[in-house]
Length: 346
Ligand SMILES: C[S@@+](CC[C@H](N)C(=O)[O-])C[C@H]1O[C@@H](n2cnc3c(N)ncnc32)[C@H](O)[C@@H]1O
Image (cartoon, rainbow, N blue to C red; front, side):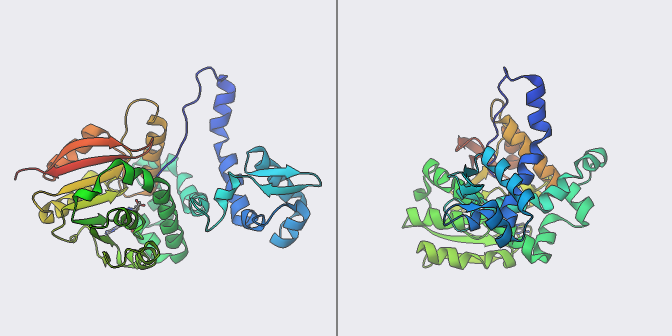
């Protein structure tokens, strides 16, 4: 996932800096409310007044006006005469079905994620996962049983991948492989882009059966259906065998070391001896990316069954226990690196 926070400038006044942190949820809740109400979609054809929008969206005109005014102060809308507002270029990202849409991410973060984050204190006190304390079940089981939340999660994951896919494909030579398996590949967005750029390559997206069903449409849309397969299954049981490339994007960070080892060992058992394993993950590095990676680590603490972001040394140790050697880490963006590993001699 890509959060792009920046560390506060050191010359910033401490009270102002602290207020920005303390009131962070004012901003996120305003963006969530604007999006959930459907304002960005209503404004796609041009400006409208607060009163017109309130009527169309069944909202209170005065309260809506104040939300629109704050949203324009945040740069999401542009304010015009007569209480009219239009979408700014930044606000366009809140629409559905536009390039790099972030609508699903906004809605996902403002719903079960937010409720679970409200239990952070309980989690830190007890060592239990806040999501499970709140919802009584592990997050991936919850997403399977709650179709609305599951659809939103998969759409948000596809948006994250869309945002980073061109950087991942530019940073690594996938042309060296014959057969690539994307383990936990969701709706196949990443695999489809890699196949599109490498016409000799074929691939499999592997994920839970109810998730992977969504891949056919993306393969079709990207024109790679003849070389791409979707396979449903459980990566704790097994993964598709005999490929020379395995990629896992934002998978290992969802799981504890012991669960991660189960997945990695399943890949180790079936990867070709000359194959490569690639993990696209946030690596906790010292320096300016630490605010993003360490807050994402807290998000993993809140949401996942034992997941965490890891340092280079932690990835090296984990991979080695599963029978892989870490070869190199290729930085892709402030939030994503590709960790390249090869099977170690048994
Ligand atoms: C954080 S998402 C990452 C999705 C995608 N790779 C990406 O980069 O956006 C984790 C993925 O792991 C899948 N997953 C969870 N448990 C799984 C299991 N036991 N077997 C296979 N896939 C699983 C989820 O359905 C989801 O698509």
